[in-house]
Image (cartoon, rainbow, N blue to C red):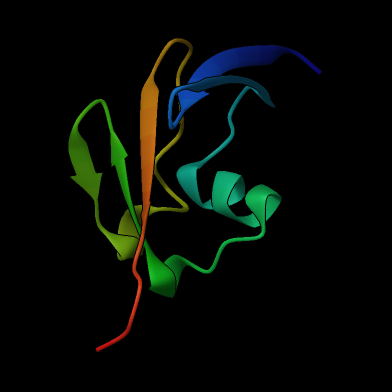
Length: 69
């Protein structure tokens, strides 16, 4: 299977071609309800994570929500 290289929070990663933002969250063990995802500085809605295919050289930022008070 062919791979592409993307950058996730400043770190390069190899992922399979046709990999979605939702697939990335699953691979990283992250809950889509507890993070926000931006690709090339554009926030991806939770309802689009599984449809948004990642392309080579894209910059992905995953922001974790932290609760507290």
